[in-house]
Image 1 (cartoon, rainbow, N blue to C red):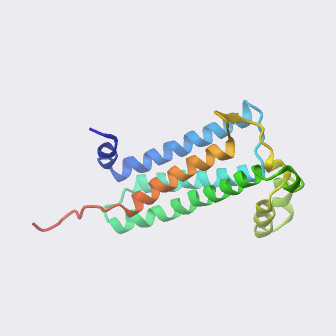
Image 2 (cartoon, rainbow, N blue to C red):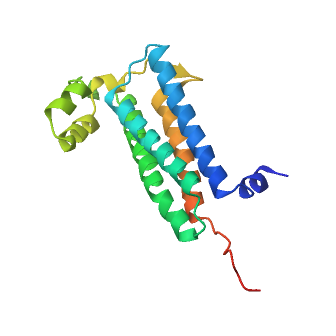
Image 3 (cartoon, rainbow, N blue to C red):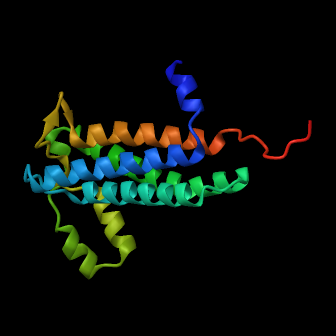
Length: 177
């Protein structure tokens, strides 16, 4: 049995539980880097975590509900896709900032906690997306890839897999012969 056949035989619930486990593993790795490698997350890293947590939460909900109607299966994937899409966009912005020439990197700004306490959320998001010098810093690599580059690849794979699950054809339960 090849990989494609194996993947096609998984149920909606199994795939969503796999998404949840992958999200939990991604967050576990992020927390490991923060607490054991002492790599403090920048604002863009935190926003990526929010998207990954949202994706994990929505896929867990979809797995627990496990609807029989195909339209509901698709509808349950929409917030999961939005969440992982958010994380993917933030990671893309982060990678872009890291690849800017040194003279074009924005100056470091105030901390995310201060921004959240002082400004409305729309201003915080706009400020974070303009980037800051701390987001352009590459302080850890694995196999030559920075954390945002690894995150971007991970989010792209999750997004494509979730989109496939949403667009997948589901058999009609009571089809007439």
